Amino acid sequence: MPKVGMNLPMGIKYSVVRARFGGRAGRAILAAFVGSLLSITAATPALAHYQVSSVIDCGFSHLKQCGYGGVYDGAHHVIFACDTYADGHGVITYYWLWNGQTGGISDPNGSAAGCGSAIVGSDTNPIYQYQFCYKASSTFNECYLITTVT
Image (cartoon, rainbow, N blue to C red; front, top):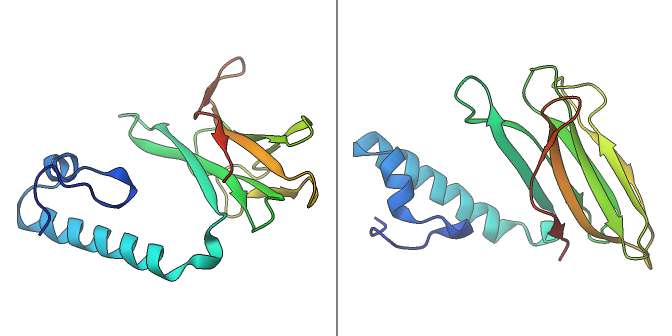
């Protein structure tokens, strides 16, 4: 059992998780969550270049995930955007290549199954940074921080 204040995988503090999931059921959820994180971390060396960002600000309580996007493949060539909340607003993932070229990819079918993706750049000009955004209105995008691809 983790101790209060202990750092869990992904930088989550146990006290934060405990506040949301108290009691026996909460401990069971926490154990399953930590176990799944550990199994993913230990079993996916091939996904070392899979980076994802998301925005959680949808729904009545603004606590639902709106979507996610990022970069995947070992050479940093594939950019993607996935809309996960049926609200009529879209998502977009912007990218920057090493040579300064920029672009973006949206999810073409909204919250239906499937995501938008594109192969961009080259081995000598890979994706350097990306930023995932939720199209909150026609004039405002709610964006995650710009992320440098490692």
